[in-house]
Image (cartoon, rainbow, N blue to C red):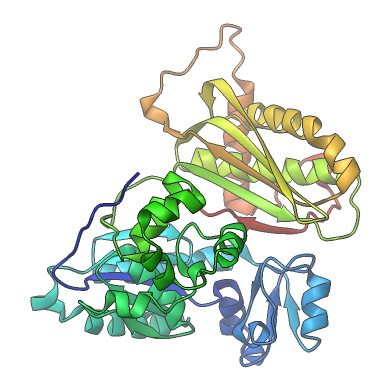
Length: 403
Protein backbone atom coordinates (compact mmCIF):
# COMPACT_ATOMS: atom_id res chain seq x y z
CA UNK A 1 0.00 0.00 0.00
CA UNK A 2 1.37 3.36 -1.00
CA UNK A 3 2.04 5.84 1.83
CA UNK A 4 1.00 9.36 0.85
CA UNK A 5 2.63 12.54 2.12
CA UNK A 6 1.30 13.73 5.46
CA UNK A 7 2.83 16.35 7.70
CA UNK A 8 1.84 17.80 11.04
CA UNK A 9 2.45 21.41 11.79
CA UNK A 10 4.81 20.50 14.61
CA UNK A 11 6.72 17.55 16.03
CA UNK A 12 4.04 16.43 18.47
CA UNK A 13 4.32 12.63 18.47
CA UNK A 14 6.43 10.99 21.16
CA UNK A 15 7.79 7.47 21.09
CA UNK A 16 8.64 6.44 24.65
CA UNK A 17 10.72 3.28 25.01
CA UNK A 18 12.02 1.82 28.28
CA UNK A 19 15.72 0.97 28.15
CA UNK A 20 16.59 -2.75 28.43
CA UNK A 21 13.32 -3.12 30.28
CA UNK A 22 13.67 -6.49 32.03
CA UNK A 23 17.31 -5.89 32.94
CA UNK A 24 16.55 -2.36 34.17
CA UNK A 25 13.84 -3.70 36.49
CA UNK A 26 16.35 -6.18 37.92
CA UNK A 27 18.88 -3.40 38.48
CA UNK A 28 16.22 -1.23 40.08
CA UNK A 29 15.10 -3.97 42.47
CA UNK A 30 18.62 -5.25 43.24
CA UNK A 31 20.88 -2.24 43.92
CA UNK A 32 24.04 -4.38 43.90
CA UNK A 33 23.42 -5.00 40.16
CA UNK A 34 23.50 -1.34 39.18
CA UNK A 35 26.39 -0.56 36.89
CA UNK A 36 27.09 -4.26 36.37
CA UNK A 37 26.37 -6.40 33.30
CA UNK A 38 23.07 -8.24 33.81
CA UNK A 39 21.46 -11.00 31.74
CA UNK A 40 17.83 -12.00 32.18
CA UNK A 41 17.16 -15.62 31.30
CA UNK A 42 19.44 -18.62 31.41
CA UNK A 43 19.13 -20.79 28.31
CA UNK A 44 18.44 -17.82 26.06
CA UNK A 45 19.05 -14.17 26.90
CA UNK A 46 15.70 -12.38 27.09
CA UNK A 47 17.26 -9.03 28.00
CA UNK A 48 20.72 -7.61 28.63
CA UNK A 49 21.73 -4.47 30.46
CA UNK A 50 23.67 -1.84 28.54
CA UNK A 51 26.82 -2.89 30.39
CA UNK A 52 26.44 -6.32 28.77
CA UNK A 53 25.39 -4.91 25.40
CA UNK A 54 28.62 -2.88 25.34
CA UNK A 55 30.59 -6.09 24.81
CA UNK A 56 28.28 -7.51 22.14
CA UNK A 57 25.57 -9.34 24.08
CA UNK A 58 22.20 -9.24 22.35
CA UNK A 59 18.82 -10.89 22.74
CA UNK A 60 17.83 -13.50 21.85
CA UNK A 61 21.30 -14.99 22.20
CA UNK A 62 22.17 -18.40 23.67
CA UNK A 63 23.17 -17.97 27.28
CA UNK A 64 26.51 -19.73 26.89
CA UNK A 65 27.49 -17.37 24.05
CA UNK A 66 26.50 -14.34 26.11
CA UNK A 67 28.52 -15.54 29.11
CA UNK A 68 31.52 -16.19 26.87
CA UNK A 69 31.34 -12.59 25.65
CA UNK A 70 30.74 -11.24 29.14
CA UNK A 71 32.10 -13.63 31.84
CA UNK A 72 31.39 -11.11 34.62
CA UNK A 73 27.67 -10.88 33.80
CA UNK A 74 25.15 -11.73 36.49
CA UNK A 75 22.35 -13.97 35.22
CA UNK A 76 18.91 -13.40 36.74
CA UNK A 77 15.82 -15.59 36.33
CA UNK A 78 12.92 -13.71 34.72
CA UNK A 79 10.24 -12.25 37.01
CA UNK A 80 7.36 -11.45 34.71
CA UNK A 81 4.98 -10.38 37.45
CA UNK A 82 7.47 -7.64 38.42
CA UNK A 83 7.89 -6.58 34.80
CA UNK A 84 4.13 -6.35 34.21
CA UNK A 85 3.70 -4.32 37.41
CA UNK A 86 6.41 -1.90 36.25
CA UNK A 87 4.79 -1.67 32.82
CA UNK A 88 1.43 -0.75 34.36
CA UNK A 89 3.06 1.98 36.44
CA UNK A 90 4.81 3.45 33.40
CA UNK A 91 1.62 3.43 31.31
CA UNK A 92 -0.17 5.23 34.15
CA UNK A 93 2.41 7.99 33.73
CA UNK A 94 1.84 8.02 29.96
CA UNK A 95 -1.93 8.39 30.37
CA UNK A 96 -1.47 11.13 32.95
CA UNK A 97 0.51 13.08 30.35
CA UNK A 98 -2.02 12.65 27.52
CA UNK A 99 -5.12 10.53 26.87
CA UNK A 100 -3.82 9.78 23.37
CA UNK A 101 -1.60 6.76 24.10
CA UNK A 102 -1.05 3.83 21.75
CA UNK A 103 0.70 0.93 23.46
CA UNK A 104 3.02 -1.03 21.19
CA UNK A 105 4.30 -3.53 23.76
CA UNK A 106 4.82 -3.77 27.49
CA UNK A 107 7.74 -1.32 27.33
CA UNK A 108 6.94 1.21 24.60
CA UNK A 109 4.17 3.46 23.36
CA UNK A 110 3.34 6.35 21.08
CA UNK A 111 1.88 9.52 22.63
CA UNK A 112 0.16 12.35 20.77
CA UNK A 113 0.73 15.63 22.63
CA UNK A 114 -0.64 17.98 19.98
CA UNK A 115 -2.95 20.59 21.45
CA UNK A 116 -1.25 20.53 24.85
CA UNK A 117 1.12 23.44 24.27
CA UNK A 118 -0.92 26.01 26.23
CA UNK A 119 -1.39 23.82 29.29
CA UNK A 120 1.71 21.60 29.24
CA UNK A 121 4.35 23.36 27.14
CA UNK A 122 6.18 22.26 24.00
CA UNK A 123 6.42 18.57 23.04
CA UNK A 124 10.09 18.56 24.06
CA UNK A 125 9.23 20.01 27.48
CA UNK A 126 6.50 17.39 27.88
CA UNK A 127 8.97 14.66 26.93
CA UNK A 128 11.48 15.92 29.48
CA UNK A 129 8.90 15.85 32.26
CA UNK A 130 7.70 12.40 31.18
CA UNK A 131 11.23 11.02 31.45
CA UNK A 132 11.68 12.58 34.86
CA UNK A 133 8.40 11.15 36.15
CA UNK A 134 9.18 7.64 34.95
CA UNK A 135 12.60 7.88 36.59
CA UNK A 136 11.25 9.22 39.90
CA UNK A 137 7.88 7.45 40.14
CA UNK A 138 8.86 4.07 38.66
CA UNK A 139 12.63 4.10 39.01
CA UNK A 140 13.41 3.20 35.40
CA UNK A 141 15.33 4.88 32.55
CA UNK A 142 13.37 5.70 29.42
CA UNK A 143 14.26 7.18 26.04
CA UNK A 144 11.86 9.42 24.14
CA UNK A 145 11.90 10.37 20.47
CA UNK A 146 9.98 13.48 19.37
CA UNK A 147 8.96 13.97 15.73
CA UNK A 148 6.15 14.75 13.28
CA UNK A 149 5.40 11.09 12.55
CA UNK A 150 5.30 7.78 14.40
CA UNK A 151 8.02 6.34 12.21
CA UNK A 152 10.44 9.19 12.81
CA UNK A 153 9.67 9.31 16.54
CA UNK A 154 10.47 5.60 16.83
CA UNK A 155 13.71 5.98 14.89
CA UNK A 156 14.63 8.96 17.07
CA UNK A 157 14.13 6.98 20.28
CA UNK A 158 16.30 4.15 18.92
CA UNK A 159 19.08 6.57 17.98
CA UNK A 160 18.73 8.42 21.29
CA UNK A 161 19.24 5.36 23.51
CA UNK A 162 20.07 4.82 26.26
CA UNK A 163 18.26 7.12 28.67
CA UNK A 164 18.02 9.99 26.20
CA UNK A 165 15.72 12.42 24.44
CA UNK A 166 16.05 13.12 20.72
CA UNK A 167 14.00 15.76 18.92
CA UNK A 168 13.74 15.63 15.13
CA UNK A 169 13.08 19.26 14.26
CA UNK A 170 10.46 20.23 11.73
CA UNK A 171 12.07 20.70 8.33
CA UNK A 172 15.19 18.72 9.34
CA UNK A 173 13.66 15.25 8.98
CA UNK A 174 15.65 14.19 5.94
CA UNK A 175 18.87 15.64 7.39
CA UNK A 176 18.35 13.33 10.38
CA UNK A 177 17.15 10.30 8.46
CA UNK A 178 19.33 10.03 5.38
CA UNK A 179 22.73 9.35 7.04
CA UNK A 180 21.29 6.44 9.05
CA UNK A 181 21.90 2.80 8.09
CA UNK A 182 19.10 1.11 6.16
CA UNK A 183 18.35 -1.26 9.04
CA UNK A 184 16.70 1.68 10.83
CA UNK A 185 13.76 1.44 8.42
CA UNK A 186 10.74 -0.63 9.40
CA UNK A 187 10.69 -3.73 7.24
CA UNK A 188 14.46 -4.04 6.76
CA UNK A 189 15.65 -7.29 8.29
CA UNK A 190 18.90 -9.14 7.79
CA UNK A 191 17.94 -10.52 4.36
CA UNK A 192 16.69 -7.20 2.96
CA UNK A 193 19.72 -5.41 4.38
CA UNK A 194 21.99 -7.92 2.63
CA UNK A 195 20.18 -7.44 -0.71
CA UNK A 196 20.47 -3.68 -0.40
CA UNK A 197 24.14 -3.96 0.53
CA UNK A 198 24.77 -6.15 -2.53
CA UNK A 199 23.21 -3.36 -4.61
CA UNK A 200 25.58 -0.82 -3.05
CA UNK A 201 22.98 0.68 -0.71
CA UNK A 202 23.88 1.07 2.95
CA UNK A 203 22.17 4.31 4.04
CA UNK A 204 18.60 5.59 3.99
CA UNK A 205 19.70 8.49 1.81
CA UNK A 206 20.89 6.09 -0.88
CA UNK A 207 17.41 4.54 -0.99
CA UNK A 208 15.95 8.00 -1.54
CA UNK A 209 18.48 8.69 -4.29
CA UNK A 210 17.72 5.39 -6.02
CA UNK A 211 14.05 6.34 -6.45
CA UNK A 212 10.81 4.46 -6.02
CA UNK A 213 10.69 2.69 -9.39
CA UNK A 214 14.21 1.27 -9.07
CA UNK A 215 13.52 0.23 -5.46
CA UNK A 216 10.43 -1.62 -6.66
CA UNK A 217 12.51 -3.35 -9.31
CA UNK A 218 15.06 -4.37 -6.69
CA UNK A 219 12.76 -5.55 -3.89
CA UNK A 220 9.30 -5.88 -5.43
CA UNK A 221 6.48 -3.39 -5.72
CA UNK A 222 5.17 -3.48 -2.14
CA UNK A 223 8.47 -3.52 -0.26
CA UNK A 224 10.17 -1.10 -2.63
CA UNK A 225 7.39 1.49 -2.42
CA UNK A 226 7.18 1.11 1.37
CA UNK A 227 10.90 1.62 1.97
CA UNK A 228 11.13 4.51 -0.47
CA UNK A 229 8.23 6.28 1.26
CA UNK A 230 9.91 5.86 4.64
CA UNK A 231 13.22 7.10 3.22
CA UNK A 232 11.37 10.31 2.37
CA UNK A 233 9.92 10.48 5.92
CA UNK A 234 6.38 9.80 4.72
CA UNK A 235 4.19 8.18 7.37
CA UNK A 236 0.57 9.36 7.70
CA UNK A 237 -0.48 7.12 10.59
CA UNK A 238 -2.05 8.71 13.64
CA UNK A 239 -1.73 7.59 17.25
CA UNK A 240 -4.57 5.10 17.78
CA UNK A 241 -6.19 4.75 21.19
CA UNK A 242 -8.61 2.15 22.46
CA UNK A 243 -7.40 -0.43 19.95
CA UNK A 244 -7.68 -3.91 21.39
CA UNK A 245 -4.92 -6.31 20.60
CA UNK A 246 -5.54 -8.83 17.85
CA UNK A 247 -3.55 -11.63 19.46
CA UNK A 248 -2.07 -12.77 22.72
CA UNK A 249 0.77 -15.20 23.12
CA UNK A 250 3.69 -16.48 25.11
CA UNK A 251 6.94 -18.22 24.35
CA UNK A 252 9.44 -20.22 26.34
CA UNK A 253 13.10 -20.67 25.57
CA UNK A 254 14.25 -24.26 26.10
CA UNK A 255 17.99 -23.67 25.89
CA UNK A 256 20.48 -25.53 23.75
CA UNK A 257 20.35 -28.79 25.68
CA UNK A 258 18.29 -31.42 23.86
CA UNK A 259 14.83 -31.72 25.38
CA UNK A 260 12.71 -34.86 25.40
CA UNK A 261 9.34 -34.89 23.67
CA UNK A 262 7.63 -35.11 27.06
CA UNK A 263 9.50 -31.99 28.22
CA UNK A 264 8.41 -30.10 25.11
CA UNK A 265 4.79 -31.20 25.55
CA UNK A 266 4.88 -30.21 29.24
CA UNK A 267 6.13 -26.76 28.24
CA UNK A 268 3.24 -26.47 25.79
CA UNK A 269 0.81 -27.44 28.57
CA UNK A 270 2.15 -24.69 30.81
CA UNK A 271 1.87 -22.07 28.04
CA UNK A 272 -1.71 -23.07 27.17
CA UNK A 273 -2.78 -22.91 30.82
CA UNK A 274 -1.42 -19.39 31.13
CA UNK A 275 -2.88 -18.16 27.84
CA UNK A 276 -6.30 -19.63 28.60
CA UNK A 277 -6.42 -17.68 31.85
CA UNK A 278 -5.27 -14.46 30.12
CA UNK A 279 -7.92 -14.93 27.41
CA UNK A 280 -10.74 -15.31 29.93
CA UNK A 281 -9.50 -12.45 32.09
CA UNK A 282 -9.63 -10.18 29.02
CA UNK A 283 -13.13 -11.49 28.20
CA UNK A 284 -11.98 -12.51 24.72
CA UNK A 285 -12.43 -15.54 22.47
CA UNK A 286 -9.99 -16.99 19.96
CA UNK A 287 -10.59 -18.64 16.64
CA UNK A 288 -7.02 -19.39 15.51
CA UNK A 289 -4.13 -21.07 17.34
CA UNK A 290 -0.58 -20.47 16.05
CA UNK A 291 2.41 -22.59 17.12
CA UNK A 292 5.96 -21.30 16.64
CA UNK A 293 9.07 -23.44 17.00
CA UNK A 294 12.72 -22.40 16.81
CA UNK A 295 15.38 -25.01 16.08
CA UNK A 296 19.01 -25.53 17.03
CA UNK A 297 20.14 -23.78 13.84
CA UNK A 298 18.00 -20.69 14.80
CA UNK A 299 15.62 -21.29 11.91
CA UNK A 300 11.94 -21.16 12.87
CA UNK A 301 8.62 -22.45 11.60
CA UNK A 302 5.00 -21.65 12.39
CA UNK A 303 1.92 -23.83 12.18
CA UNK A 304 -1.66 -22.61 12.61
CA UNK A 305 -5.17 -23.99 12.76
CA UNK A 306 -8.52 -22.20 12.88
CA UNK A 307 -11.55 -23.38 14.80
CA UNK A 308 -15.10 -23.48 13.43
CA UNK A 309 -16.29 -21.51 16.46
CA UNK A 310 -14.44 -19.06 18.74
CA UNK A 311 -13.58 -20.34 22.20
CA UNK A 312 -11.96 -19.49 25.52
CA UNK A 313 -11.76 -23.12 26.66
CA UNK A 314 -8.33 -24.24 27.82
CA UNK A 315 -8.99 -27.84 26.82
CA UNK A 316 -10.09 -26.88 23.30
CA UNK A 317 -7.02 -24.69 22.81
CA UNK A 318 -4.80 -27.44 24.22
CA UNK A 319 -6.24 -30.04 21.84
CA UNK A 320 -5.49 -27.82 18.84
CA UNK A 321 -2.01 -26.94 20.13
CA UNK A 322 -1.17 -30.60 20.69
CA UNK A 323 -2.28 -31.39 17.16
CA UNK A 324 -0.02 -28.70 15.75
CA UNK A 325 2.90 -29.94 17.84
CA UNK A 326 2.32 -33.52 16.71
CA UNK A 327 2.40 -32.38 13.09
CA UNK A 328 5.71 -30.58 13.67
CA UNK A 329 7.34 -33.27 15.81
CA UNK A 330 9.26 -34.87 12.90
CA UNK A 331 11.08 -31.55 12.43
CA UNK A 332 11.75 -31.33 16.17
CA UNK A 333 13.27 -34.82 16.22
CA UNK A 334 15.46 -33.96 13.26
CA UNK A 335 16.58 -30.45 14.20
CA UNK A 336 16.07 -30.04 17.94
CA UNK A 337 13.91 -27.36 19.57
CA UNK A 338 15.22 -24.32 21.46
CA UNK A 339 12.01 -22.28 21.75
CA UNK A 340 8.30 -22.97 21.69
CA UNK A 341 5.70 -20.23 21.36
CA UNK A 342 1.94 -20.12 21.06
CA UNK A 343 -0.31 -17.28 19.89
CA UNK A 344 -4.08 -17.00 20.04
CA UNK A 345 -5.27 -14.84 17.15
CA UNK A 346 -8.48 -13.74 15.44
CA UNK A 347 -9.69 -12.53 18.83
CA UNK A 348 -13.26 -11.41 19.39
CA UNK A 349 -15.05 -9.84 22.33
CA UNK A 350 -16.94 -12.40 24.38
CA UNK A 351 -20.24 -10.56 24.22
CA UNK A 352 -20.07 -10.03 20.46
CA UNK A 353 -20.14 -13.72 19.56
CA UNK A 354 -23.10 -16.09 19.63
CA UNK A 355 -21.73 -19.10 21.46
CA UNK A 356 -22.68 -22.65 20.48
CA UNK A 357 -24.89 -24.30 23.08
CA UNK A 358 -23.89 -27.61 24.60
CA UNK A 359 -26.64 -30.14 23.90
CA UNK A 360 -25.37 -32.76 26.31
CA UNK A 361 -25.94 -30.48 29.29
CA UNK A 362 -22.29 -30.87 30.39
CA UNK A 363 -20.59 -27.54 31.04
CA UNK A 364 -18.07 -28.92 33.52
CA UNK A 365 -15.04 -27.86 31.44
CA UNK A 366 -16.04 -24.21 31.49
CA UNK A 367 -16.80 -24.37 35.21
CA UNK A 368 -13.41 -25.98 35.84
CA UNK A 369 -11.63 -23.21 33.90
CA UNK A 370 -13.37 -20.56 36.01
CA UNK A 371 -12.61 -22.39 39.28
CA UNK A 372 -8.93 -22.83 38.42
CA UNK A 373 -8.63 -19.17 37.36
CA UNK A 374 -10.17 -18.12 40.69
CA UNK A 375 -7.81 -20.28 42.77
CA UNK A 376 -4.73 -19.08 40.91
CA UNK A 377 -5.86 -15.47 41.18
CA UNK A 378 -6.27 -15.80 44.95
CA UNK A 379 -3.36 -18.06 45.88
CA UNK A 380 -0.87 -17.64 43.04
CA UNK A 381 -0.19 -19.25 39.68
CA UNK A 382 1.29 -22.41 41.22
CA UNK A 383 -1.64 -23.05 43.57
CA UNK A 384 -3.19 -25.42 41.03
CA UNK A 385 -1.12 -27.21 38.44
CA UNK A 386 -1.37 -30.19 36.14
CA UNK A 387 0.14 -33.47 37.27
CA UNK A 388 2.32 -33.48 34.15
CA UNK A 389 3.91 -30.20 35.27
CA UNK A 390 4.84 -31.17 38.82
CA UNK A 391 8.59 -30.92 39.49
CA UNK A 392 9.25 -29.62 36.00
CA UNK A 393 11.05 -26.41 35.03
CA UNK A 394 9.92 -25.04 31.69
CA UNK A 395 12.56 -22.47 30.88
CA UNK A 396 12.11 -18.76 30.35
CA UNK A 397 8.62 -17.51 29.68
CA UNK A 398 8.29 -14.23 27.82
CA UNK A 399 5.12 -12.54 26.59
CA UNK A 400 4.98 -12.13 22.83
CA UNK A 401 4.51 -8.64 21.51
CA UNK A 402 1.03 -7.77 20.39
CA UNK A 403 0.39 -7.60 16.66
